[in-house]
Image (cartoon, rainbow, N blue to C red; front, top):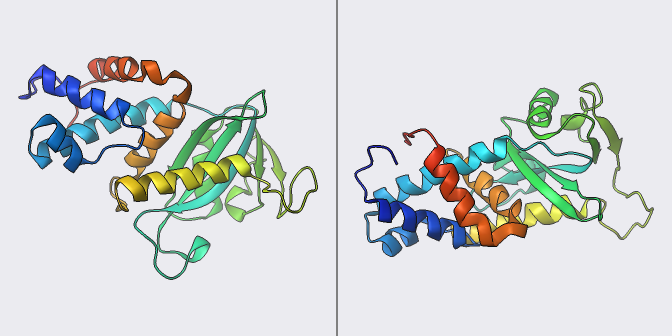
Length: 229
């Protein structure tokens, strides 16, 4: 907000609207709500998302963690899954003591090589995490990095063939895609990570929705000035 040409009330309203919109808010919709040009609303949104992104970058997933690959971006035509032209990502969800999903992270990858998976794992996982994957080569280096790696190929720990072996991470992926396609109707790669970080930010604070505006406002005020292009 430092040296901003916008009134403080506009900033406050934008942060409030972003924090209260569970499905996210597009720059077009925000421009209507705050009475500013689309370009102004777009820059406001991306500055707020940058703050969310940096908050999420500090989060490491502990304990039992489901991890899988996924693909994000525009609406896919033709090939899907690992043959798609969309952007690959590593997605992880930690499982709390109650056996329910706790926190989630999504990191885009340049490719599905082991080296890329190693880099994502170091950014996502806390020391000593117990990671469940389907054995994709992208995750082959997890044990070498010091994590406990358990491969669950096409089955699950309980041996029930009709049960999803990774229910929490798959639901997280499905919800993230629905959020992107429903609110933004597909996204290009350039700013895709910041949108995914916003989704994770909201998911990881779902228990404290009554405080999310206060927390986001405090984070924005404390952040250094940003230039978004």
